[in-house]
Length: 546
Image 1 (tube, rainbow, N blue to C red):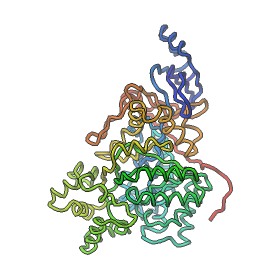
Image 2: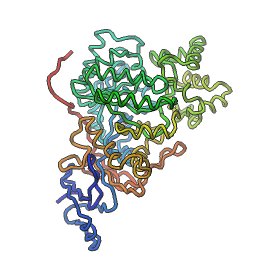
Image 3: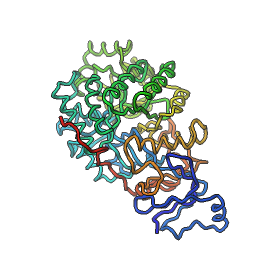
Image 4: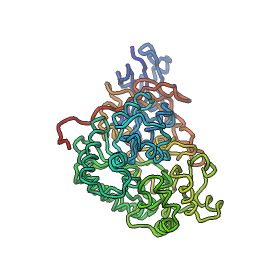
C-alpha cells in the first residue's frame, strides 16, 4: 500500500508538458506515476471514487496542478533554520529546497575568535546567530544544520567571502601566494563536504577586495567538481557590463559553469538591451544561466551604500572612519560623485527610494522610514543621517532599495536562461520576495499574465535548478525520485505580499511534500521536519591537491 496517493492532478513533471496522472508516494520516494484518461476522471466523479484503497492517505487532485518541489537558488536561511526550522515562508510558496551561503556570505569556515565580527556582519542579511558558533569548517556547520532538522532541504555553496576572511581577515589587499593556496584548499574542503557551488559576493567585505586572478584560481577548484560559480557581481548599475564581463572571463578561463545571482539593473534602463545581448553572446561560449527575484527592488545591508575602501577592516575600523571628520567628508564626496566601477546604490536610487526595514532595537523607530524621512526628522542631509546611523549603531541595519520598473523586471524574466530565487531576508519588515516569489513567478507571471508558458515557469523552478546543482534525485516527478512535491490550485495561486504588508502568504497552495511527508497542508505547516542536508560531493575523482 502507498503512503500517499494524489489522484487526477494535472502533473507538470518539470521537464515536459503536463499530463493528467495519479502520483503515489512510498517512504520518501515517488513510487507511482500513472497517467489517467480524461474519461477515467469523469467516471471517478460519477461514482465519487478516488481509489483510496491503494493508499493510507488519498488526496483528490482534480483541477489542481502537481509540480516538483520548487528550488530557491538564493536563500539566506543558513542561520535562520537554527531558530525556525519550519521555514513556513518558503514552504507556503512551494519551495522544498534552498541553496544557502550565497553572496559569498556564510557562517563557515570561521575561527572561534572571528565569530563575533562575522556574526555582526551577517546579521542584517542572515539574521542573528548563536553566541558561540559550535563549528569551524563548512562540514561541521552542515552537521549542525542536520541536527536542527529543518523542514526544507538545504544545499550549501562555498562562500568566498567567508573563506577569504578565514584566511586573511578583512584586509583590502591582494592575497599572497600562500594565502591563495590556503583559500583554494578551503574551497576544495567545502566542495568535498557536499557544497554544490562556489558563491562570490563582490560588493561585500572582504570579497569586494579580491582581484580577478583570485576569483579565477578559486574557480579552477570549482571546475574540478563541475560546480557552478554563483557571483553577486561587482556592479549591477552603470558598470554592469564590465562587471559581467569580469565573471564571464573567470568562467571562460577556469572552465567552471557560470550562474549569475539575481540578475538585475539598478537604474540605467538604457543598458537593458546591451545586458541581454551580452548574456546571449557569452552563453554561446560558456555554460551560463542566471536567476532573478521578480521585483524591482533589492534588499541588503545599509552599509552597502558605502564606498569599498570605507568598509575595509572590521566594525571598529568602520566606526573610526565614520567619526573622523576628514574621512567622513571623503565618504560623502565619493558617494556624491561616485567612483569608477563602484556600484553606488545610494546615488542610483536616491534617499527617497531607500527604506530601512530592520535595525538594532534602539533604532526600531527607523524601520519603514526612507533615508529622506530619517534625514528630515534628524534635520540633516539623508546621506549624513545614514552615516550617523552606521556610526552610532554599527552595520546592523537592513534596507530595501527601489531601483527598477516592472517593465525591466519582466523583460529580464522572459529571457530563456532565467531561473528563480527569493534572496529572502528574514526580519520585522522583510522584502515581499521572502513570502511571494514563487507565486509571483508561476501564479502571476505565467498563469495569469502569460509571460512564459506554465510548463517553462515550472521548469525554471524545478528541473533546471536541480540540474544546475547536480541534484539528480529531485526536480522532476518521476518514479524513484525524491518525493518533493507542491500541489496548488491554478485558479487561486498568486502572491499577496506587498512592500507595505510583506508577510502575507500566497493563496492557492493545497499541500507541500518534502521527502514523502506532508509539511504543509491548507492553512499552515504541519510541524513535520524531514528536510535533507546535502553532504555528498557533486563529483568524485582525482585532482591535484594544493
